Image (cartoon, rainbow, N blue to C red):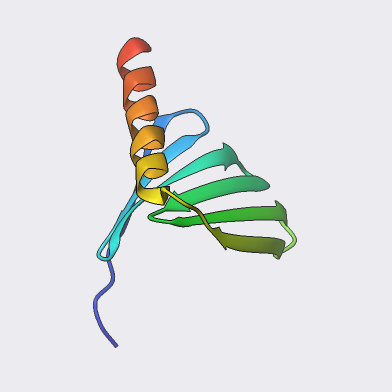
Length: 83
C-alpha cells in the first residue's frame, strides 16, 4: 500500500480544482450531478445523495488537455472577478 495525496480547492460555487499525486482535474456541478475533466477524459456522475447510489459514464475527448486548461482558466478568472 502506498501513500495517497488529494486536495480539492473550491474556485467558485460549482467549480472545483482537484489536485492529486497523479495530476490535476476540474469538476463542475453540485451534489448529485458532477462533470469532471482530466486530461483527455470526461467523467459524468449522477447520484442520489444520501443513498450511496450513483451512475457514472466516462469518455475520451479530443483536445482534452486544452479543455481542462480552459475550465481552470475560466474558474480562476471568475474567482478573480468575484473577489
